[in-house]
Each structure stands twice: as C-alpha cells, then as structure tokens.
Image 1: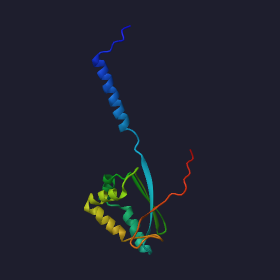
Image 2 (image 1 turned 90 degrees about the horizontal axis):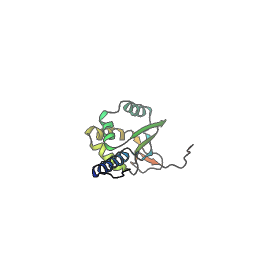
Image 3 (image 1 turned 90 degrees about the vertical axis):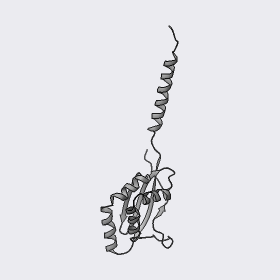
Amino acid sequence: MNKHFSIAGISALLVACLLFTACEKATAPEKLTERVFVVEVVPGEQPLKEYLDYHQHIWPEVEAGFRKAGYRNISLYRYQHLLVMTITVPENANLDSMGKIAESSHPRCAEWNKVMAGYQAGVPGTAPGQTWVEASRFYHFNGQ
C-alpha cells in the first residue's frame, strides 16, 4: 500500500486542524464570576414604592448600557429597605470601567444613576455618601 501524501492533502489537513482549533477556542465557555452588593433605600414607604416602581419599568437605554459594558446578568432582591444586587460579569472584570462604559453609552444612563442615587443610602458601617458596597462570601455549599 502506498502511504505517500500529497502537499495539497497535507495542506488541507493542516487548514482543517487550524479551523477546528480556532472554532474550539471560540466556543470555549467564558469564565464568569458573580459579585454581590448591598444598599438601603432611604427611610419611608413612599421612596421605597417609587424605587420599586422605577425598577418595574427600567429605561431601555439603561439595559442597553449594561449590555454594551459587558454585564451578563443583574438581579435585585430586597428585604424591607435592604436591597441586594447580584451581578454576573467576566472573571477579572473591572467594575469601575464597566460602570463608566454603561453610563457613557447614553445620557439617560447617567440620568438613571443620578435618580437612583437619590433613593439609596449606605448600610451601617459605610462612609458618608457611600451607597452600594460589595458583600464578601464567607460560606459556599456545592452539592456536586
């Protein structure tokens, strides 16, 4: 049996391998991380109601800014006036840069942040004027 390969055959095989490797890398799952933040809504039932109402109708430009900045997921939870936000972002993401990208994507994004800041107050232990603070994980259960 003749085991000679043509140059064209070897070239085609190399191209196929390179394409497969490139496709494999392109479809590799992105490494993501979840970050958790807390804040309180200023005291009073009216500010809480207004804050919750805004979040029932988030301005489309704000969510477009989130997408442009690279946020993968944002969820808000609450207990009375305490709010918890989880965000999923690429591992090693710079949240300050992402926030600036989101806010600069449309004037309504900066406006949204300004309006929301009027409803937010720091949790006990935060510095004056500080609102959202990152919570640190101290326990994790993985059932696998």
